[in-house]
Image (cartoon, rainbow, N blue to C red; front, side, top):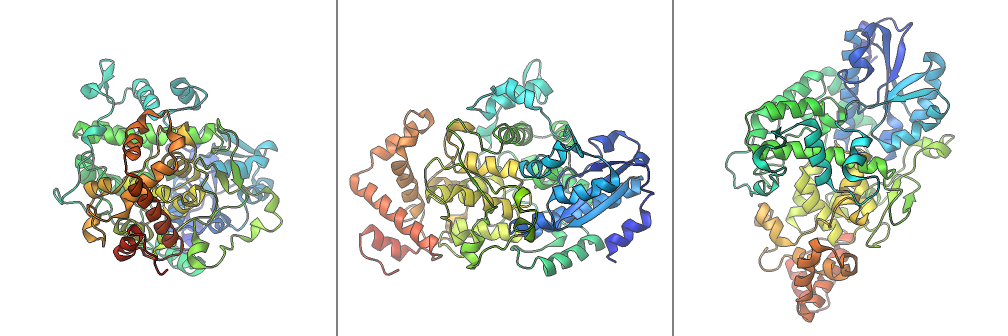
Length: 571
């Protein structure tokens, strides 16, 4: 028997006569829902360690360790409180797993899952009355709040929603107006980081036998999954979560604001709190985190910048995802839907098909959730994705460095996600669904409700103006200004970096989609002023770089010089 099983058995209370709750892996808190109110001796919790879900996609091994270690420690913590625990390891979909438990435990209660994929999986149990769904109390706003703020039909804009929630909650409000006389201090939060103040080292967490034995088991049983395993970087217990947040309060938040958009080879973290994974698991509660931030003596730009991410963007994307049924219902119609989960380019990189779980082709195949919506505003089509996102060198130092960070840590901050990973994939017309699936498998904080809006809605603009006014794309100058990546690159940002060519080619190629968009008027005018030979060069560079990266071959300055001179290039 494993150490976890031994510990759980040694403290497990009598399970008889309990009301049973199904607590999903991203609801690991006893400070919300029935666990926060009802007597522990009256409750039991079902926790499903889903190996089926883990094998649906090639999830980063650090993600598997983070989710399952927290889930196992939550089981132990609840048993210590007197809550009965049924921890189940399962190779079947959730509906099949829970359906067999209902026969023994009776009707289960579940806070509404944030995950659309899980809601779809368990809907047959809800329809049959075997699973009662109640409100998820971890959120800071309701669907009614969303509709009151931005309306029932798109387009929807985060700034309106954010202002509404600030007024409703009173957070950073004074005398009926925003503290500091404006709602957003984003303009003050755009400094590059030159090394001072020093960036703190990310927090580490003490050894624990439950986490360590789980890491060994994942390494053995999920060895075909990508990513480094680093148990010391994983907060797993309730005490670890408190330690992680205390580190953020002390080391990150005081200077978070000014440098929140900066990027550096010297620190993947800089002054970001790294709290998204723990908040998405609900090991840290968003409301408690916001209360702490508001109470701290912080510069207003840092305070408001963090509040906007949690109260504004995090709540907003959840509602957009829910209102559109995971982007399956759009003003432009219903996009295609992937029948099975994508592997985020794993097969392109590895040369083999991702096998997936047996349940997807076995007796449960007819009921498993699909692989997600496939909106594609620019019509780039399916399948195009580069092995560079799996660690094959691209020749672009910014992309290669961020990708290395992600596969080492399962994390990078929001600007590297948006302005390096998302930006380059969009400029190169890579498949937006493949990029979405890559984010989903690569990051420890990724669930469908957050990753699909961030990638399909924001980074790639695949859903058009539904939730943002423009695609978040840029050329070389932004990356050069906000990072130190260019210093280690074979390309000179002021002379021969291809990213600016890719930017101008993107605007030229997709101009028709932005006619009448006032936020794109200036870059479109600049693009129109480029000389015909420069526009032709942009198109050649785009075609060449895209082809090379899709083939898994790094781009070099010599190659691009030949392309710019229209010379034939040996490939």
